[in-house]
Length: 542
Image (cartoon, rainbow, N blue to C red; front, top):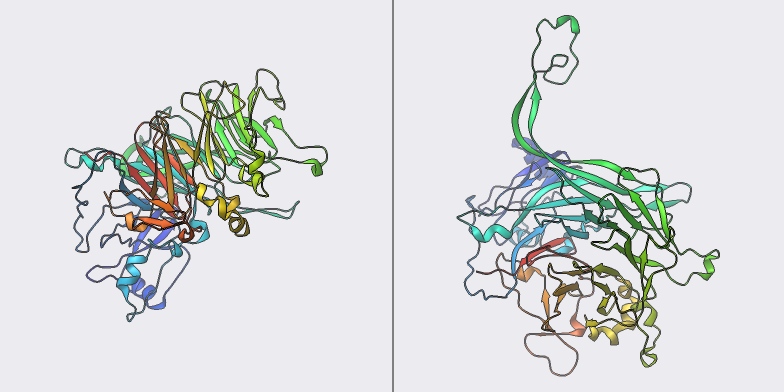
């Protein structure tokens, strides 16, 4: 793929984190033949006429077509309180090498390449997003089983406004596709959830899970390598002891910074059904994993044994009326956890009361209005996500149409209910036919528990201020993908005359949906996953 006035660079992927530049006849041959050999990666990533090189596991700086560093867009016209796009990152996973004939309009292709989600394969779709406890790292998992970690740029005196930008820190393959021969079932490699552990030393630790297996990963940096072994030569081969005449003291030599991801624990063979949630306990010694019918408690040091704390599987599966949809530990009390069900109920359990928590401590359910009863009532009442507030006083749940906030001291009804996209209530029949009604949207709190965020369709996401009761609809799209661009509120028109800045409910694109979002633990920085694109916005425009 060649861009006018810009030299096209081709890199060959040697290992998951190392690359070598293809030069001369080798690169020319690939361009002529349209070679799509496994492992070759195109590193040209155009963005408004600029590009970045993806090499050695890291992204280079933005460059203009002349090769010089590209300045960021001017921030004039930004108002206080406006959300602006800090950076738009495409997860650098399997980008195919494209061969383009000379008579093709390369300008058109370059402008859409890596920006149009139609180029994304199923494996590139982001399936989870999670900040670590400090907000310095942001991890994403995709349907291809890969985890990509972004690191926040350090603030510089010359470019203070670049503090909110995140660049690729590490990429690794977390899970591979497997096959259960006993049940003749394929186990997808898709990453369902990622959860960070608090940082205790220079290394970072995170949990990642697919449908069946949870893995504990250690992500660490290495900038020195040992040299001067006595029993090994420089290439690592064993030397003949008879040839060793002197004793050398090994030394550490500086080397290029390398970020390594190594699996420290693999927790497998404990779930019959698909894992939908993992949650780290506040004691940081245990965590739980939940599937459709059971919740297991694990110790981080023991991989071959877990303790079953919830089991709702009936003796006769024909009597099954509900399944577990999400579960989470209390942020401060290690004995308390909550789980939600497909019936729209939430159960709070205390592990001090009983070893097997089949009997809940508290039961949260909102009585259904008989006048609103319909064929779709049970489907849209299913809870797709449950989150404790940072204070531990409240529980937030997301069903298909609403976000609800519950007080732990009041079980009979939520204290707050927010309509996410109530204009879809009249479209439930068509949403049922195209299976969109079964989409599982997540919800997140901001650092002070005062604002709630969740996703919707047409790449819209919604924010609700609990104090002022104001809400806003924003859009993560290619049109807003210029760095430092201000997000404009969007409105959906249900009927009647449509204003210029409104979009009709019939024009919504249900293939574009924001299911996964994350909020920085202490600052107003959010991450929004839209198909294979990761958008990062911040509420800072000074």
